[in-house]
Structures are given as structure tokens and as C-alpha cells.
Length: 157
Image (cartoon, rainbow, N blue to C red; front, side, top):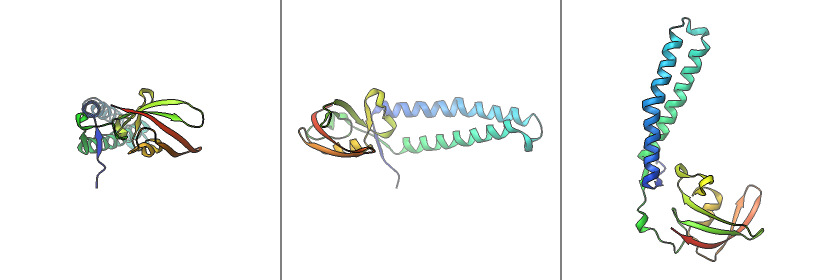
């Protein structure tokens, strides 16, 4: 069974634009590199040709994965989201019980995750620990350097 990915409309548009870029710009560029390398003669000792063919294989793999992601994406209806418990597309304010640090993340699909924008994938250990919990709950999460306790301070859209 394919992995269903829940995304926002903007997230799906971003994926489609990336796919279009790869298919209409990157693919022809690599085909051109292969043609130029082929024109240089003996392919058995042509490093340029080998490199271009490898790049083509990687690009095709990336295009294939992106098409799968788009095909298995479902747009979330943000009007049906609520804040009674933590779920995807919620903004969650949490407090690290050990050091008192307060952080706020929006839980998103893998394809939209970007920690610089404070968008955390729902597949991270912290997000998995928060899902389904309510304001005031204390969540213990297993992270690479041990267990960390977080208190859920606020859930918003």
C-alpha cells in the first residue's frame, strides 16, 4: 500500500512546480549533456558520458518519487481542523520541562517540513509523541540523546 501524505494546497502546488521544473528544465539539460558526451567518441572510456548517465538515473528516480508523492497526496480541509487535541496542521506551543525552553511548531507532512520555518514533520519522534494529546498534557519523547518531557501549552491553527 502506498503512503498517503496529507498536505496543504500550497504544499501540493510546491510539489507540482518542483516536478515541472525537473521534467521541463533538468531532464532536457541532462539529455543534452549525454548527447555532447556521446559525440566525443569512444563511450567505454568516457567519464563525462558515465557521469551524465548516472545523473540521468538519479533525476529519473527523483521524478518518479515526486510523482508517487503527488499521486498519494490528499489535501487537508483546514476548516475541519480543530484544536481540542494535537493533529496535523496544528500549531503547537510546547515547553521543555528540563530546561524551560518554549518552542512553537506547526505539524506538517514530510514534504512540507522545514525547521527554519518551524514546520515539523508529523513523522518525527516529537510530533508522534504530541499527536492526539491535549493542552496541559505532559509528553515524554524518546530522542537520540535520551528522553525529554514536554508540556503542551497551546494548540492553535
